[in-house]
Image (tube, rainbow, N blue to C red; front, side):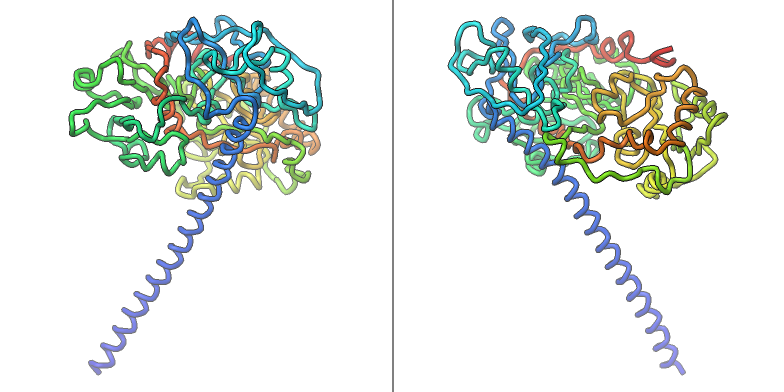
Length: 513
């Protein structure tokens, strides 16, 4: 009897181990698949970067041979020919306060072209008088203004490619994010591989920044410039660091100031929250050199996502489909912060008086657990026609994953509130969203959504951009390393509090009334 009992126990234990083994196998298989999917997605983004940089190498200016920024009196514009030069000069009064930049970019008059064909790129000529210089020193080649315009790359459809206007990697007042230029930038100096690595000290430790100590991050991202290392503590040999990376939560500054407040050390402020959600930065007054935020006037722009169009639009367009087909519900919203500064929830309540708005999360009556991950938005993509991508604050350039990921990367039309409409237009695919400021009231917006709901042709107009571009890996760490290696980088000093909260950066009301 006892032996039978032991056999029974043995069978149970064996079954438990077999079950655990099967679960482990399923979990491992799923993890591998997720990893493969993530790697594939990352490879797509990396390939876009490679193509852009390779294109700039094949055009008039070879990125690897670009000279670094010259002194102000000799400053000239670095212009790869794959970018559009029209309207490249910022208007007066648009630049935010705070940044004091020693380098100046020469003005270019607004230039236009009616050409609708792919134009040939003229050969480079040696420097001549009356020409616009490409590069930063007299050793660079030159092109005339007319030749520069002829270098604007046009697609077969006759539309200019929407690359950022290139006005230099350092010009924070240009209105451009300079991301592509910084990603492709390799300083022209002594061989970087033999130079001493640039040391980047991370406040709070590298783990809080999602990276590992050392140079692995730069190698893993295949950075063009890799001679940088991330460190958590002061170098043991007593050597100097090259950059101090600070977040929005201020540390004990007294020790940092004592050890690292030196002209050759770059103090970098990184933040992805809006000014409405951050503390005061008066303690950092005149301590910060570079900024890294979502704002386009940051030294290193760090957006939540970046979309870039294909260079051949006609080849990228997917077969036409009806994005309204099978959708049975009107509008969805996912929100857990009920006390936003822009009263987004009350705007949604006003919409509910005229159309159906299903609110998920802590602030609504419907639930979709956060641990469900993308399943909530996959459901939204299949069932709903519109998504309220309302940010928690109306601030300059403040556009988060609510728009880029939850909205654009699903088959819904994002209805947006947050940054100005022109801020969205700078970073979004054409005709891909609806901004609340285009309507005098929630009632008027509701009427327009009803119109789209009842007309599939009008609804599908907002999806014509699908398949015409990719989301780009902006490689923050690569760009940081490249800029740290620029031996002629300009001296920059930022009054952080003044820059971060200057007049007009945020508003509680709508941008337009």
